[in-house]
Length: 353
Image 1 (cartoon, rainbow, N blue to C red):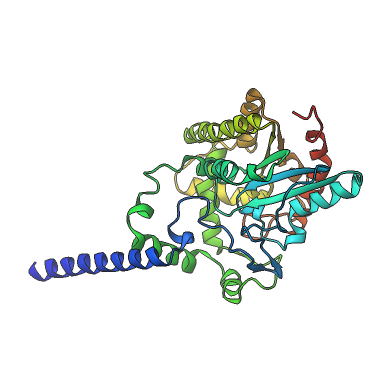
Image 2: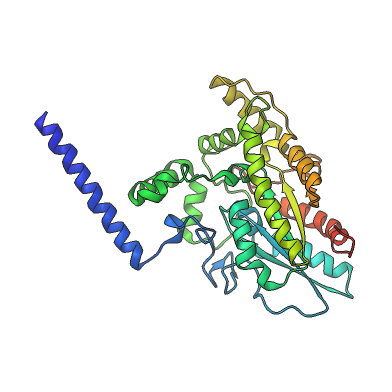
């Protein structure tokens, strides 16, 4: 018993020493990716190169931002890693949409600023809007809402962040564990080599890791799960505040709703349902539920929105997502970019609201 107590005390003291050491190191050498709970956590490093294309001086995946010319219509795109993109910069859906819009209307220049930051949600996007996006004087703010995780990300309670806030050691160990056990060999190779060559078919997650991710997100489709409506209300709270702020600046807000792969990949959807059933959950699957409910509530609030689910449902026979990754591949980005290039001009008119 004494020996057990000795080891327990030894481990506790060792943990506290390690925790103190990490906190001292972070104090002098901040690592936002590990310990910043704000929108800068996964913000890009200014001028870092991704697949041969540098981020701008603000750490965004775009060319340099600057003062707006009086003959320019400026759109700012806010969102998470879907907006930031996993393909090379020229193949990002926002870059594609900007190019097509300008080709179709050579008399007026349109700029679409990509201000996507991985792993942020509506709460952080609201902060990014007020802290930075409005500074660039946008005519239209486009918040890209990914149904796969933005409902959950809207919650982000202090309770959910308890471990990250109070134990840097546990946070670091957890992230190392996730990297080693949940990602694929393709991802580890790309990570090690520094993201120099894009691979449209390389897998990010292991089969087990990706299925676990999709199962955890699937509550938004299960009509028997009560959490969804609560998370929907949280998301609408932040979107509503963003709309009020935009209106006060005479700027329009447009919400673009992006589907999850499980909505448009029948095989993946069946795997998720089988896994849920095996774990004792009998899901009443409503495939369009998150998009439909969000659209209904946005309409009541008078917030314009575009739902891309019907577009991607029509492409079920085509691969639109990077395998085991959740993000659009080259084709998915072309599909979304081309569609938005046709849809956005209607919201750029004086009566576009």
